[in-house]
Image (tube, rainbow, N blue to C red; front, side):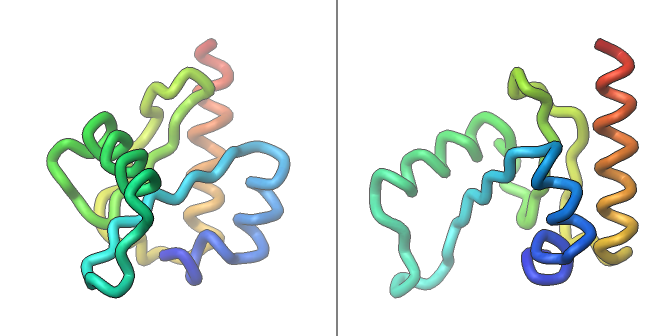
Length: 97
């Protein structure tokens, strides 16, 4: 998802002005393990937002850390569709506040 969506021009153009992106990585291979402090931080995020351990898991949070929407698994509709969904969810959340 990272290359297909999160690095796409459409998505980056939107997120640069509207979102803060956080990538919590959980490498499987021992050679790719993260530094302990970063792993601890990522584990805390997983405990809070993904207790069931779904991977990949993509979350859209509001400014207070409340989950707006969760995508579990690989998103296969493309970057343009994902960006559109995110825009709609952000706008809908904004009008509710």
